[in-house]
Image (cartoon, rainbow, N blue to C red; front, side, top):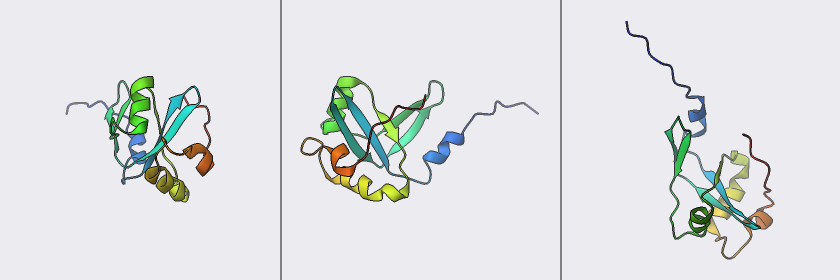
Length: 108
């Protein structure tokens, strides 16, 4: 019997069943939150995640400029915030201010 390398897959619990994600992006006081329904792991080493975000979307433009974003996995209790971020443009409103969501230091 051939030995197999066991791959760590605990992180997959955050992706299935299908969830809604809040992707945050920005710098220098220019921040935004976008609701995203499609994110998936694409690589373990290096760790990479793919999210479907249109390049003409406000967040897509910010991400192209900064080359950074954070995928947040909100609990169901934040569904009002998720819907708000999905139905309003960051070009027109400050979603952090309107939802009361805040930026915290990322966990490395």
